[in-house]
Image (cartoon, rainbow, N blue to C red; front, side, top):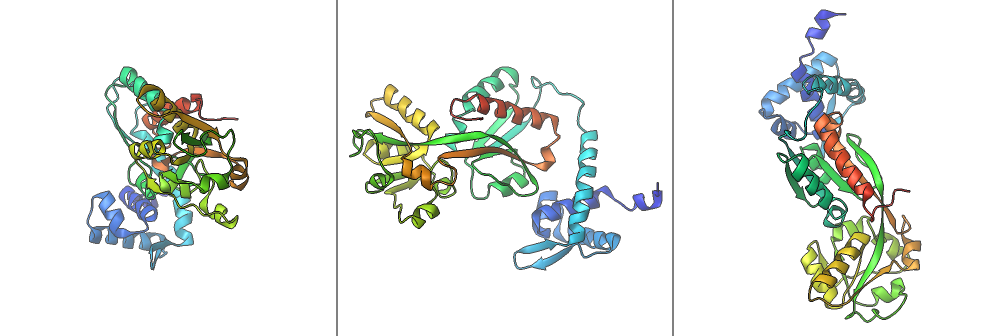
Length: 323
């Protein structure tokens, strides 16, 4: 063991290196670490001298790691992970666990697990605080900056984001009796698009969740011009009630069916996606769902327990296909 060389490796320098690499920005890394930008710039200079490499080059969009930086990242990440594990208890008791967990997931995905999750937390982990909000276009950045879990419809994630495939979700068409197509046994995509539609969570609709992608539809000559675009379930409910078609997930279909049965609503019909819509869909109407988290939490016992609970609840959901 080369003691003199090891002594040069200040643990704070290694942490600084990892955060700068994750953020690709000294200013954002400094804010995340709670230090001043000049102080972190000095740490970066020490790293450059220590490893005899510039490590990062400045580009228009921020800092770009060198090949040497990527090599160091592969070596440093497990070292820091092992050191973090030294501070973790060998076991924990969820009944006494005091921790705040944050989740980014859209409402239609939350429907698949939120009821059993809240029941479990109430009885087994009463001291846990839960924060939930919709997934956004900045979702992966938010995972890097402290959000515990993201639950998304996607097939790929950034390199420093770990993920686990839960299963897949089917799409459906939701119509009220006020819609001109309500009394038909089957509908085509063209028929749907010839009438007014409402799009719930337009960002997800454009990025392949439970419906066909707009790009693919345009290639086939279809143009989607929804009457209403919203991320509000209340607005969506009113739009469907007034005769607009909703293309959404099977969870939304169940939600609308429950609303219609419990409240003074209108009759609802939930239909499978039209065959021509499924043919145009890259996922054939069945879209993958992943749980995502930053690699810093990968071996955290409490975090692993929490995400495993959600994974189990989602797999037990009637709306998630695991085959």
